[in-house]
Image 1 (cartoon, rainbow, N blue to C red):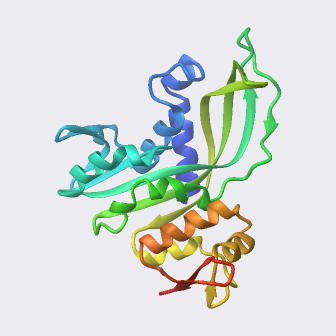
Image 2 (image 1 turned 90 degrees about the vertical axis):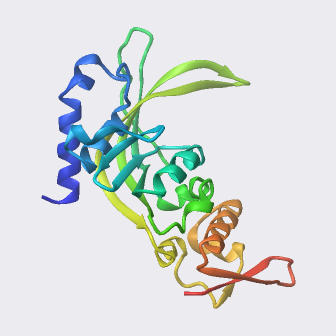
Length: 245
C-alpha cells in the first residue's frame, strides 16, 4: 500500500469513528491531528503515551512522533526532554490545496470555495526557525507534509473594517508529498535551482517566487543548519551567500 493509500485509509478510519458521529469540530481532538496519528501509528495503544513529565503523541520503543500544526517553538522544552532518550520525529502538516466552507448560524454549510493559495514546503520556514537550536540534533527529524484539506470556518464578527473568521475544523483529504529533514543537505530542497555561485536574498526571492522577507528567513534557516555561508555585502548592501554543500 502506498503512503497516499495509507493516508486515505487513516482519513476514512478517523472519520468513521466518533469524529463523524459527533459532528464537525465538536470532538476534543481535531481531525487533522487524529488522522496523522493514525497514519504514523495505527496501534492506538502507542498514542498519548506518558513520557517523563510530558505526553508523547506516539511512542513506540525508543521512537517518538509528535504532530504539530503550528507553533513549533512551543515544543522546545518537550523536545529537549524527549531527545535525551528517544529518536524524535516532528510532523508538521502544511495545507496544500484547500476547499473552504462556512458554517452558517443555522448549522448549514455554504457551497465549497477553492482557496487561491497553494501551500508549499517553504511555508514552514518560520516554524522551523522557532526550533533552530534543535534542528541539527542527531536524534531529531522533521517531516513536512503537504496535505489537501477541507476547511470549515465560522464568522467571528469584525476586525477593524473587515469581517473576521475563525477556522473551526480542518479535514484532511489527501497526502500530496512529504519532505524529511534529518541531515543538513536535506534543507537544500528549499533552495531554488539556477542560482548563481554567489547570491542574495533578492536572487532567492526572484528564483523561488517568494516575498523578500520570506527569502531572508529562508537564508537564515539555511545559514543556521550550515548549508550556506554568509559572505560580505555587495554594492547594494545585500549579504552575499554561497552554498557549502
